[in-house]
Image 1: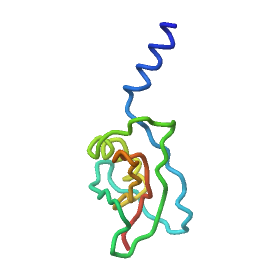
Image 2: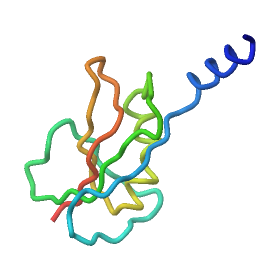
Image 3: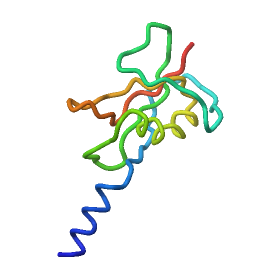
Image 4: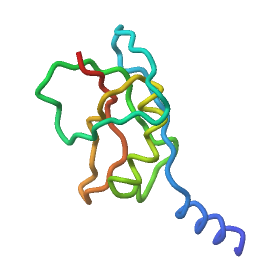
Length: 105
């Protein structure tokens, strides 16, 4: 019982991690520097863009965190994918859990 309680507590405190899945596009976008700057958008941008990948939580996440912790968690994947922005998918509670990595054209 203590083991299960400890696992539940640890799982709830760990930051989420994200897998990157193909965006279904043939566009080749070079990676950006590991600490690149990128936007987090709630709606698609007005400018031209191409989707390069999807961010998907590795495991179901009850609390994906607030915007800045979300940015820190996804930064390496967004930059590696060559993204300029993420069209994020907020939950009904306003938490950020994944989204589409896009590159501007």
